[in-house]
Amino acid sequence: MSIDPDFIFSANSLQDYVDCPRRFELKYLLKRDWPAEESEPVLEWEHELELGTRFHQLVYQYLSGLPEEALLASINDSDVESWFRNFLAFYRQQEFSQIFPEFRVRIPLGNYQAVAVYDLLALTPDKRLVILDWKTSRKIPRQAWVSDHMQTILYPYAALESAGNFLPQVTLTAESIQMTYVYVRHAIDNTLTFSYSAEHHTHNRSHLEQLVSEIAALELGAFPLTEEKRRCKFCVYRSLCERGENAGSLAELEAEPELDLDALLGGLDFDAQDEIAF
Ligand code: SF4
Image (tube, rainbow, N blue to C red; front, top):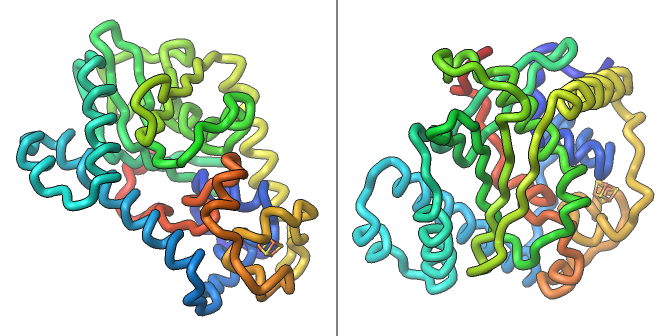
């Protein structure tokens, strides 16, 4: 067993394990820093992440009640402004009775715990719980790929497991939960929505618990490198793994819409200090 009993899993860390067990080991167990790199693609990627972070901050400020005009006036990047306007166009069409922006929950998962950090949890007037997640990816991935993504598995599961804590007045069923990704670079047809069910919930529980036990059973040094070498081109650890020196460019990444830049860099991972404990 290589994992500290206090280790808290997240969608990002589980996705890292699924994509490449060695990346999980380097990032979360060995806590290896990224090898220093000043090459053009990495600077470009970091700039993208900064814009994504700025966009998420703007949305949080808006959902916290700051005036739209003041937020729009504060934006000094045309991409971020366009994403924010697309978000506003989407959000104005929604009707929610209660919202929980940037909301964190922590749930038990096997012998460990997991955290889910929601961009927005929202209750509709007819008591459905909508999980919303803003994506700044350039391309919208295939629904089937997103369906298998750890975020799509963990987030509805954690919402149902913890709903009694933050919505004690509502009797929530799995069928009353839905998860929607909003791809804000796109003005129209920019959502992917997933319904949820008791069957999904049972399946997700067993999948998540099995994954956690599999990870916990591995000894340090035994986490294998991914066999999908295309992943290495965009991975910050590739020099450590002797899987190439030069990073792929953003243009190359665009051709691989199903490699998630946020997950690859881990830049938007969670701060596990202040979740709502279940
Ligand atoms: S470079 Fe490749 S093998 Fe090494 S951690 Fe990254 S994805 Fe895994």
